[in-house]
Length: 334
Ligand code: NAP
Ligand code: GLV
Image (spheres, rainbow, N blue to C red):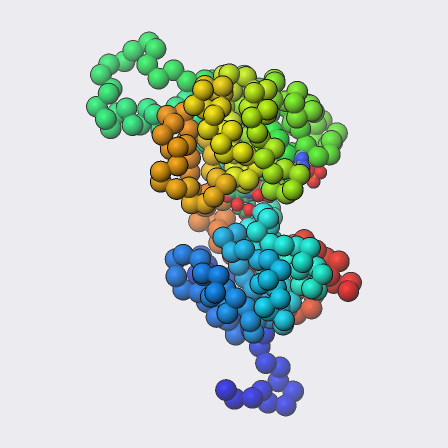
């Protein structure tokens, strides 16, 4: 390799764990020397460890586990930029201790994710997957007054768990459906209560009152298995449960029991505890479960914006500036 000329700085080295949509990688190519993992599937652990060994920056996805062992294997690493808002796949405490910035991509995916949560809510309420299967299987024999009756969303009560950016965007959509709105969250938000016409409830009160429950909390030690047998027991037998947050927020065995026993009416989930969900998972035998493969943010424009923001975060950090979205800004003061 030709050494840099006097006064010329060599480009930072970056490892990127998957091809990204849009033109984000073109920008990265002009400002860094990067290695790209070309496969459709995530790099196996050994390849990830090898990829970061010489790297100044890592651009990763939520499928990559960034733990202390990986950070230790990357002594030159200055930034981990994930193309996601959720960063539960990163050991942020270890990164902070090692002086590594962690960045994420909030905001740009809010509307697409809220659209999708609402699509799941309506699809589960009105039994879209069952209805479509009935047509394909030749079971549409006649219009019938009680064929495939679902639950009306309009005028029903929606309980939002985690009234952050996406939770609020879901609430705005629900207003258009004349839904009554409740929320539980870590902190009360009087201004938003006023603006959206949404009432605060304790978690337990919300479960008891809501016809629909939609989850929008991050996965943290406090929220892991927030939805367990006890939570599902507290819900109405007619309730529909929607999860576009993280699979780990739900005890999946408890969800199975609640659906199989008709303790709750239906669920629509975009996320599962293990991803991908195994094809022989018992959940897939339930007619009252709708499951999608973690695609709530997957619109063309949103994924392009997420990739651009992930690159922007990475480049700003490598330039020694504060990135637009940094989850451990205290590293900058170290
Ligand atoms: P956000 O703006 O940070 O909102 C999260 C909300 O959860 C905040 O209001 C927060 O309370 C609340 N919260 C945090 N811990 C809590 C706890 N222990 N109990 C109750 N409430 C708690 O994040 P966001 O942009 O809305 O995203 C939310 C999550 O959605 C992400 O973390 C990610 O896991 C998931 N997500 C999934 C997809 C997908 O493709 N399926 C796409 C995007 C996002 P405070 O107001 O007190 O901070
Ligand atoms: C997707 O799940 C995200 O956290 O962006």
